Picture 1 (tube, rainbow, N blue to C red):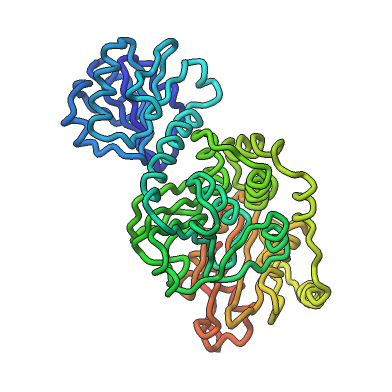
Picture 2: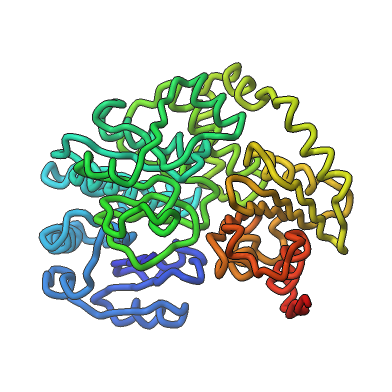
Length: 458
């Protein structure tokens, strides 16, 4: 992400505080002393005239950037804004001013906030401006489409389902003009309960069905998650690590966020879209499940979104969704896994064998992490010709997502977050000498986590 500050005040960069390691921070100014101060703080700088449209064109500013403007002179501020917005109107702009009124021609294009507003954090204020512009951009992309597809991962989870419902609300559409769909089925009991109790329809489609839609938006996933997803897409909104190699008209990917539902809540709030009890309940459950009730991979933005939504949500429905009945047949798989679970230092491995339901595996991975002294849990099972591996950790050391990718991506799909990850591997991709799937998992995971090469099996 690129943070761009335009100012004549050397203290403005102090408002920003620390930025992420992958972020780019650029200061623009006409004042040499301001540029010198910014360089000392490690900022990239550029000297430019505030009203020079050609300079702004060369910067290629877009909706992905975050622009902060603080200029004492109202005349200079107007010249600056006039030049930027003439070049590009999709840029999220936040103006710091105590008493400046936005001219009518720029209403809805910029946010004006007093300096005191930044006591809660500069990043959150810039995100509000970004959310406002993102909603405008999304509505523009999808406005003329007859049918819009809101596409989720193959086994949709609460975060993706809630995010799709939120985008449909923002676009002012219904289930006919913007259906929510997946190439797979909703399988986990609590997720089935969610779509049932909140009356959310999730269609199961095929790759050929994509031709029936004018626009496609991906929620809580990116291309390459499934081979059926085209590499040219209209919108991608996600919080998983960013993938490249595809084209999209709109991309908003924030790996530091705990849930895509948080991004969507910011969109709803910034655009002034009314949040119904049903939508609030879905978004609360989406944030809750992906962050384990704000205890994992959580940012202040996730907490803020949860706090806004929780009073609106239906508490009785949340309790009902969160405690779905588990079929008796699953008890057999649990018993087998518990009996044969092995502990290697701080890592617990549990293989459940062949399963009739995939959702048993992540559920059991969560359970294993509660065992005394466990720092990692690696649960696995075989479902529909695939070896499914769910990995959990407290997120204090190595990243579960990166470790899982290193261990298993060459054999199938693999990845996730710092505290939770998943791999899906076709059985035919497992080296033939490994008749014991659990042994192979242990060797690959040990190699990825500790850098210890696995021994060959004769």
